Length: 318
Length: 318
Image 1 (cartoon, one colour):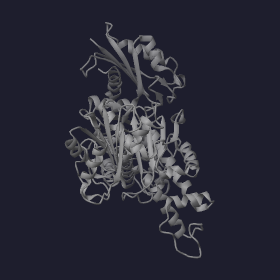
Image 2 (cartoon, chains in turn purple, green; image 1 turned 135 degrees about the horizontal axis):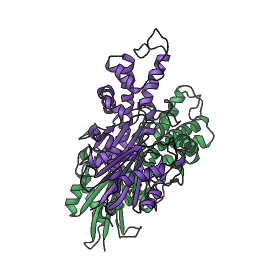
Image 3 (cartoon, chains in turn blue, red; image 1 turned 60 degrees about the vertical axis):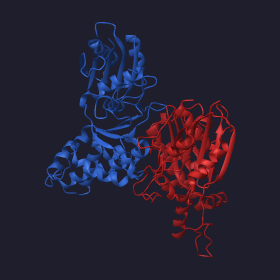
Image 4 (tube, helix red, strand yellow; image 1 turned 180 degrees about the vertical axis):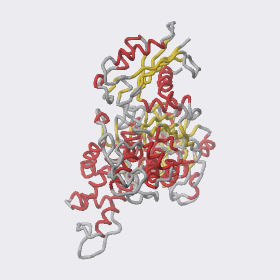
């Protein structure tokens, strides 16, 4: 029996699972704290994998998912946030050497997209656009049943497409990226800016005169659901720019399905009413929308593991 | 011997050629006027192909290139400009039926990109971004040795990526597309707007008080080469926005080579000095530029024919 080991290295937890072919449920799974800023990361990763290793010699490959930037062609992590030990680190080759099996690495957004294509909302589609809208905005693109990786392994960085060269500052330090308009922090930043400019809002009790600096996108969503005009406007604006970005992605990739993952995309109409209006307004030929499915991700927290598994299976052509 | 017939249907001329495998020089070639607005287009196309048909039965396939929009999956032209007879017209199927061989169709920009990848500046590269800057802006994208076509066959419409949602009107009727900033007509439109606003320029002799409505991008280039400040600024602005667009394309596709075709891209430094500054400024991770080749198209007028040939060979997996 062929077994695939999948690992999802998240900011908080490191998860591993072993999978038999054609079964969605793992044979074994394991979850520990990532402790990214502490030394010994590779040893923790190795132990996590050992916990799910089958008793026989059936493992064909290991798939690894990690936040980027990374190089899927060499298996090197380049500069993962909060983990100085793993800067320019040969994660893939180290794991491959330790366990003596082929090991494949890619970033979390690409793998979530691959997972949705293979096991989730994108099943049956050959051209898939996956977008996660969360603290950041990431993308995963499948073209004719293949994962778009790019020459340096840095393709599909859809959060960093320039939407307006004079737009707000992005977390990456550049201006006007999709992420700087439509991510969770972008929504909060917009609200804080408007409050500072004197907008009235339930998020800014007039009697204290102090803005809530710990405001989250979830707080804004809750205020919006209670009818707060500024909060509603903040999500509506994020949806508008998301529609502009996705219009450009349709013109570039022309997929048959667009799948939204990530926490911010869970708010529903608050974001997607204006998104749909904006998308329709900005797509320059109606044919792009013919038969186009726009839907939510289905795999939730399992997307990382299943994507790492799908990557290994794709590379092995299982 | 296997023979491929290639046809390039341009706005002015219709060209056909027959090719033996592994030879760049055609066995026979033929060129007639397209006469797009006159009836009998299919008959003219058939005769053009017959002229280059070999004496034996060696033809394996026919490749057709035409301005879009079209559907490469079905071989239908959707709405070619200036040709009402060919709206929603089964060009590929009609040619296939007449000659009894497999026939493949795609748009001119995709095929020029494919030609450069296979026979021109992109040889040896697997991930190619081709951009033609001319009356319009078009794209052709090769990903891991495959032509990006998309679900509806409308991928890689790189001239219609939104650069600034509040930007100028594009020829397609939508706002702020790359084409509305950096195409030939966009350069002219910018100059005319500045002249109207009172800018001094050799393109606008103050004694006549009339702007030259027949101004072309070539006129602007000539004025710029003679030192005209407005003309220089117009090309510099086009290059700046081209750099913004290509930065987004790198983030999306991460190619190993960017190839520029089209008349406007022939002006050299006038456009590319500001392009390179802008590209470097807007690429959000230096790794995208590592080893990236940025160069000019090599095939000139033959790109259309060679692209149609390459498409047929690609589909036949020759």
